[in-house]
Length: 184
Ligand SMILES: CC(C)(COP(=O)(O)OP(=O)(O)OC[C@H]1O[C@@H](n2cnc3c(N)ncnc32)[C@H](O)[C@@H]1OP(=O)(O)O)[C@@H](O)C(=O)NCCC(=O)NCCS
Image 1 (cartoon, rainbow, N blue to C red):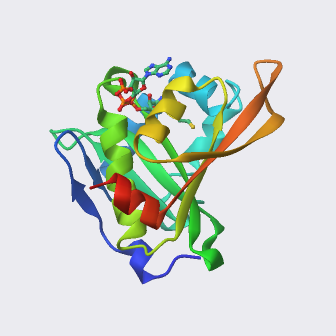
Image 2: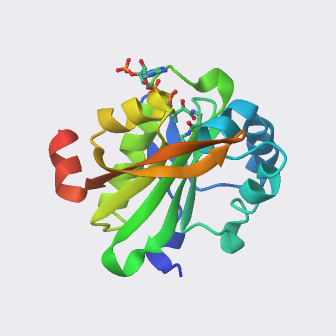
C-alpha cells in the first residue's frame, strides 16, 4: 500500500550522490550495474535465480517495494538503488535494501546515500524505524550501516543458504531519534 507521500517525486542532493525517483530511462543502466555476481553474493541471491527477483523491484507503480530511489552520480546517471519495503507500515517501520555498482563502491557513496535515505525516511515519510537484514559475512555493509547509526539487534542463525552453505543473517535497526543525534 502506497499513499501520496510515498509517490511524491524525490530528489535529495548530497556532495557525491543524489537520491531520486527512478525514470524509465534508468532501467538499462540499472540492469547493467546489477548484473554483477558480487552483488548477488552479498545479497544472498544465488546466481541464476536472482534476475527475476530483482527485476520485479523496478516496475514503478507495480514495484514490490514501497519506494525505489535511484542513487545517481554527479552526471545524474544511476550508480545503484535503495529500496524501502513494506513490512510493518502500520507501525511506521520499513525495511531498507541497497546495492551500488562495482566501480562506484568503496568510495563513500554508500554512506552518503544511506544518510540521504534515512533523512527522507524519518523526515518526509515520517517513519519511526528503519531496519535491514544483512548476511554476517558482508562485513563491509555492516560497517557502513554502523557508520550511519544502525544498531545490531540480533542474529538469525543459519537463515540463508548461499552457494551451498548456510549463513547467519544479522538484523540491524535505527530509530528516528537515534538518527537525528547521529546526523548532527
Ligand atoms: C554495502 C555497500 C552499499 C556500501 O557502499 P560503499 O560505497 O561501498 O561504502 P562506503 O565506501 O561508503 O563505506 C564502506 C566502509 O566499509 C569499510 N570496508 C570496506 N571493506 C570492508 C570489509 N571487507 N570489512 C569491513 N569494512 C570494510 C570501508 O573502509 C568503509 O568504512 P570507513 O569509511 O570507516 O573506512 C556497497 O559496497 C555494495 O553495494 N555492496 C554490494 C551489495 C551489498 O552488499 N549490498 C548490501 C546488502 S545487505
